[in-house]
Image (cartoon, rainbow, N blue to C red; front, side):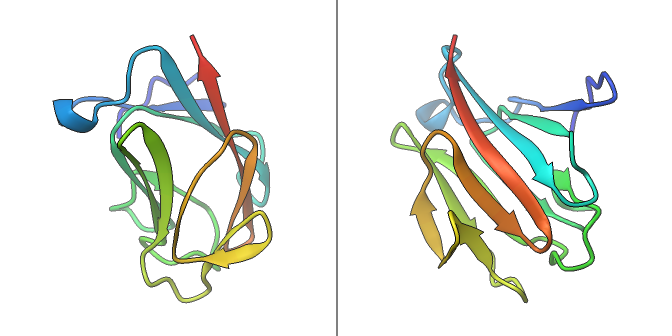
Length: 124
C-alpha cells in the first residue's frame, strides 16, 4: 500500500493493475470511513483489486477487532466495482444486507465488523 497521506487520506497505488481491468483515469473511487475507530479516514481505490481487513496483508487496514484479517475485497471488472466477502467471520453488509458478492453503486454503505464505509464514485 502506498501512503501519500495527509493524515486523513490514503492512496492505494494503481501499480500492478492489469490493463484489461484497469480503472480508467476518469473515474475516482473512494472509501470514506463514516463509523468505527477509523472514522474520518479516506482511501482512494486505484488498483483493480483491493483487500480490506484488520491484518497486515490487507491493502486497507482497519482498526477493528470485529473485522477478519482479510475480510473483503473490492474489484474493478467489466467497468464496475464489486465487493466480495472473503469468508469472514462476521460477514460483509451492503446497505444493511449481508452479501457474498455484489456490484457497488455510488453512495453504497459497506459494513465490515464495526466499521461503516461509504463508497463514492467521482467522474474526473
